[in-house]
Amino acid sequence: MLFARIVLLVQVVVMGGVGLAYWLRPYEMANLNGMLLMESVSVSNTRVYYGGLQLGLALFLLWSTRRPERLRSALVLLITMQAALVLARLGSLWLDGGTLRNLDLGALAYKVGSALLALLALYRLKPAPAAEPPVPLPPAELPRGEFDDDFGRLQRRQEPTLDRPDQARQD
Image 1 (spheres, rainbow, N blue to C red):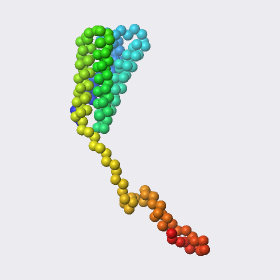
Image 2 (image 1 turned 90 degrees about the vertical axis):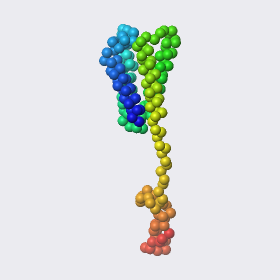
Image 3 (image 1 turned 180 degrees about the horizontal axis):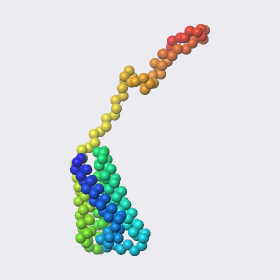
Image 4 (image 1 turned 135 degrees about the vertical axis):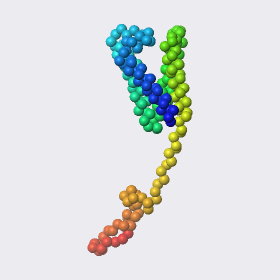
């Protein structure tokens, strides 16, 4: 569980840092990738998709590290996301017929490494114990009011007889 938390916290730091950098300095960060932001809408989209999305994912991963039952879903999200980004980068390389620059190669290696570490952390997590169904208590041990025993209530009920209204009968 500690290894899984460490993997997630490293991702929080990296994603949070890159997300903040894209949010605060979109021109400079886009320039590192060879993109030129010409319109204000492109700056806004860069902030939202490269900055805001990564910040949101970092916050989710940070939230997931606080409870053990959330670790598994956070690791699955991280594996799926990083694997999809690796496949998209390789597909883009194949479609565009280009070569990887040093920055792209480093990003690809980072994504493959983080997906593999998250996969290892997921397999190292102990499986959650199967929840056993609760055993119902016998009626004698139940607190009053939680078990509706119609037969017992009918036995205790007293109704006046028709021939003598002042005398109650036991059924």
